[in-house]
Amino acid sequence: PRQLACSWRSVQSCAQMPTDEEEDADRIDALRSALELPFYLYEGPSFDDGSWFEACSRGLRGERIEEDQYSGEHYWLAQLRRHRWRVAQPSAALLFVVPLYLNAALQPSVKGASCNGTHFQVLLDATAAAVAATEQYARHDGADHVIVSNSWKLTQTPPEQAPWSKVGQLPNELFRRTFRNAIVGHMESHGVAKPPSSAFWRCSVVSPYVANYDEAAAAHRRPPASKERDVSFYFQGGANNRGTRGYAFRQAALPQLQDLPAAHISAFSLPGKPAACGGAVSTNCRAGRSSGAFRSLMARSRFNLVLRGDSPSSRRLYDGVAAGALSVLISDELWSVGLPFPCLVPWRKIAFTIAERPFLSSTGAAAVVGALDKLSPASLGRTQRLANRFRRDLIWNTNGSRVAENLLITAALRCLPAHVVRRAAARAAALAAALRALRQHCPHGDTSVACVAPDASNCAGCETGDLASATPIEHCCADSCPQCRGLPARNRSSASRAANRSASRAAARCVPADVYYGEPMRHDASRRGAIAAYLAQADKDAPEALQRWRKLAGQARPGSGGGSAGGRGRLKARGDEASGLKPRGRGAAAGSSRRPLST
Image (cartoon, rainbow, N blue to C red; front, side):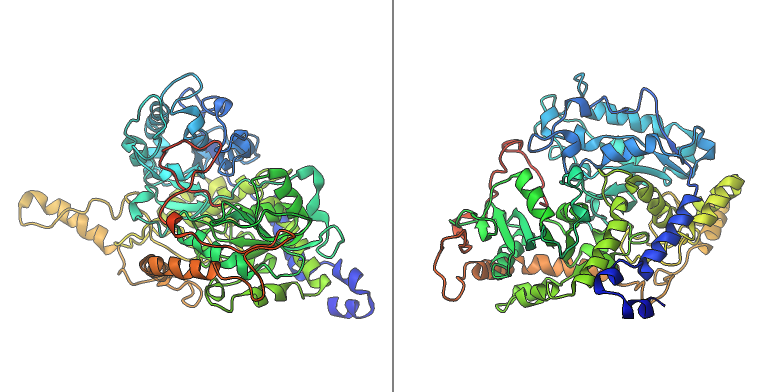
């Protein structure tokens, strides 16, 4: 019927008709309105109510802490404190939320102490001890407890975690051990973390970055074909010689994209001496860090180029979604470890994906990228409208945001072990009803990696992901599974016969390591190994690749010199910078050990 209706309508009016995807979104929203997923939020003197660190903390560049790209925890707890799913009694909850403001606590601006001068680790350990003393924690060793923190510092241990601390550093083993089985919302899944021990928790849920945009401008309502969107492709970010594969990739990609019509391709901290950006549209030039200019250009852009940074993900994805620019994902690992809520958000229908490989050849990928701008206005308009439907599912700092809600749903779908689900269903009729309803809330395929490390024993009853057929079953029970924990070694002493019988019963519940659940073609059991092999080979090839990409980045365009008027120039890699990290500027602690920003 929709095709028949479009046959006599104008293209513009046809583009405004509801698509099948939008009608599906309406149906899913109707289901969600009836969903109940009860959670308990810890509170009391041992738990941060927002006053411990946030009142005196600033972001890395001096911005307000809630504007820092890693401050999802601020919005997470603000949304949950007034959420209709919150329950007052732990016995009525399926999930248990631990309130922590770790990004604020680990900022250089607080120098390792809370606003009243208490060491941050003392406070975090008090929180851990209070949680560990509860009945609900002891029931499953914290496997149903949820923490959200996008700070990369969460994975570190002293002395790397807070080298700027004025009060010294304390061990964080108690905190890490207490929450070893927890579900953690982080900017990326650490399912293939390097090194594997860097993530101490059991299961990851991808938590979005905080977007940098102007909500009042309502730029997301501007259609891609409108006159206000006079920039075709937009990229602005870092591309220095900090020695990472992601930034070398950016250096190779930038000059290949400079001839895209009406594009703005610029960067700060470029190697060599590129020309400064000038005029309304500039390409391959050096830009400064200007939040206002960034917001304005993103709001004027049709396509947002999401090039990988130091890690597969980038804040830029959320900046573009918030401003209504269409996402072009150029990061091979992003689909496995960096896209939030694949069950709930139809990523394949709201974003375009281009592989990294074309950028690593002399012919480049400009033709592939440029072809997107030739798609019909009606097609681009429908894609934007659908993306806008899911905007509040991805943006923390927008009116009516559902990101916290999505994190809870995804934590239950992907990370609750089967034995936890079954015991919860048996504990209360209301929980059983909530779990039955949850099974309808994964309409889109999700083959991302959630488990930090697969459990070698693969115990039956400890699988995660069995609440939804569109997600893979994984074994990441760690030591939270009573059936597989602490199996004693066999011996011949009569005193251990009872223990041996118990061990035999437990072992009978374990399935062979190569058994895999789910649809084999969609949920390939080898996908984790393939990702790990990809990363290992990329690391092995990195020295050669860095030199090759920098050689590409230093090539001038045919018929061009080292620079020209109008803001056009060329990237020129400088060998003496290749091995050093460049200073990050205002807000960074001098001489500190830190993870470079994925901007």
